[in-house]
Amino acid sequence: MPAGSPQFADMPLPPRAGAGLKPEHVDAILAEDYRIGFLEFHAENYMGAGGPAHRALTAVRERFPLSVHGVGLSIGAERGLDPAHLERLARVVERYQPAMVSEHLAWSTHTDHYYNDLLPLPYNRDTLDRIVHHIDQVQTRLKRPILLENPSTYVAFEQSTMSETDFIAEIARHSGCGLLLDVNNVFVSATNHGWKPLSYLRDFPLELVEEIHLAGNAEDTDDEGEPLLIDAHDRPVCDDVWKLYEVVIAQAGPLPTLIEWDNDVPDWPVLRHEAQLADEILARHDASAWLGRRHAAE
Amino acid sequence: MIAPYDTGLSYQFGRALLEPDLPLPRGVVGPRGKKAEKRFSVYRNNVTVSLINALGDIFPALKTLVGATNFGHIAREFVRACPPGSPLLFEYGHDFPEFIGALEQLRKYTYLPDVARLERAWLDAFHAPDADPLTAESLGAIAPDRLGAVVFDPHPATRLVASDFAIVSIATRSRAGEPIAGIDPANSETALVTRPHAIVELRALPAGGATFFRTLLNGHPLGAAALLAAERDWDFDLAAAIAALLESGAFTTLSIPENTAEGA
Image 1 (cartoon, helix red, strand yellow):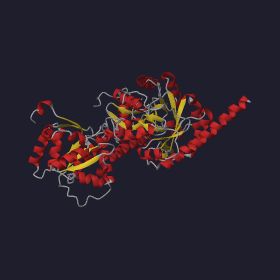
Image 2: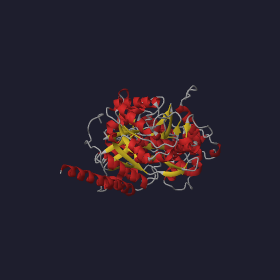
Image 3: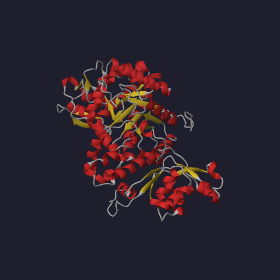
Image 4: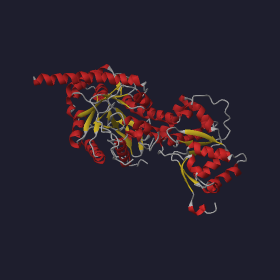
């Protein structure tokens, strides 16, 4: 197919709940009457040349809005972006024309090694300049802004000189990227670092957020035996994260909201149920926003 | 190769991820004066376990054959010795068959490396470019006296994995969760791996069939492939081989090279 040709209808992400796309769910999603708001796929899983994965994603793309989430670009890489990987991402974006493209505030590659995890960065002027430069390269190649996601982290760095929220706000200001707010990551990192989640949200530039992620976390303990949360993506969203999510939506208004469930993946109805819980919260705030506007107009 | 002069944080961090005896990378701390050993081990665990799981997904028959616990130990050693070089995890593990072939504890299971090669070829076929397989009509349109000169273009998914062992029978049973009791591992099978449409297909080729397909995949004409196969195997069945050629979707198009068209 010719690169960049608009063979798919333009479908923006609605301010509804979506789900992370798993190959084992595709048949159920396409067969049922319920229409999930959107589906998000991991870019790296569709960087092969052909085969069943592309057939399934093409069928999904014909019926649902799609967003693409990169997990391997290593935006924070010390030795620069891998131009070959950026080209692969560009081909995926051209092929599926997703409504949103997002990546992580993290690194995962160094020289010729790929670590398959979202690794943490010190927050200082050097890493800020590097990341802004890399996002600029990505946005120039893709000819569109991307969203950057706040991380779950387990360690801190002596080399850090800025708070995570200031760091992210500065990246967005200098690069022009939008933000993806992962509310579970806020809760996980706040617990792990002793921050107050509501203070984090107060300092976060919510006006730049274009998408939300929600996921389940696992409880462990740190070196001192105190709670350490792991961004596990293997269970339902916890109550504390639902409460924080409601705070975000009350402030920012309804936003496309993705449920991520990547490990111990359940049957589709379990994941759909999580999405429907998010939809209920979105509908409540959509209605109250509408009532509020009408009230103001009277 | 990582340059020896690399003293950056990512180099230290990356090495410490794969070598659990190394100290924490410079500057890695817990918040508010807390320790970070256990915290850093979350990253070590994420990296190692996710890559072991990736290998288990790529080599499911091998994992069944050696047992999940043994597989975990072997995969952990491999991950630390040969971490992936690319974020495309479906490309990982091309060195794994050779790695397990060198392991002393698996020495007597001589068929395991070839089973692993077959599983790696299966995933390569799964992600290969799409192409329409050769139709029976296009072969039927060739005049009988010119059939011997026909050459075939391989489908991009097609792989041939030769083995002294019964790798197709062993892999197929193991992937289905069935025991391999009753299979004689010493019964040599060459695997033809194809993906004519959406599904990856495995065929066990007899000795002559293996020669026939290998010759065609190397670009030689049908006549030469039939002749070599018959020399290799008294029981070679040309009609069955041509049926497999069409049914397997191993090829996409055919042609008759100009210099052989005359009097072929």
